[in-house]
Image (tube, rainbow, N blue to C red):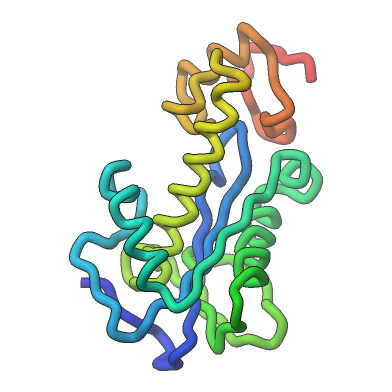
Amino acid sequence: MLKSSFSELLLECGTDEAGRGCLAGPVTAAAVILPVEFQNEILNDSKLLSEKKRNFLKPIIEKEALYFSYAHILPKEIDAINILNASILAMHKSIDSLSTMPEFIIVDGNRFKPYGDILFETIIKGDSKFMSIAAASVLAKTYRDKYMERIHDEFPMYNWKKNKGYPTKEHREAIRKYGITKYHRKSFRLLPQQYNLEL
């Protein structure tokens, strides 16, 4: 069973990102403040849930959360500042967009940068331990998937509606065949070493 809070403070925000390992598209983060009494039997780390369950949970989280927000950091900025910094920036921007400031922040993973003077805790596998981080992981994943489905129509040959920009064999084969788009991350190894890609 996921825990409702880490700090016992009423306005504890959970934050998480999605799309860190992708070759194309944004890295997306969400921030969620849930009411203390929030419970949900299905909610878990978004990676452990089916797409159907994530899409089922999204409106429930948005309806029952006290506050929620999300933010995309696009490939150009990822290439400029690196994926770790972009992931943390996405989390900061998602917290920026909350309509109230949290009293405490819990972060999935082990890397974060101070957000103002608000205390925070990084928690490895936090998205499978705390409700608000799990909720943030679901929103980050569903909003990012929606973005990838939208840009799929612009470049259908990469099949982003299915692979969401992750380094699948099919995606890499399409990069080899068609080259790259404005949505690809040029700082990533887009193809295995045996192929040379003109950037």
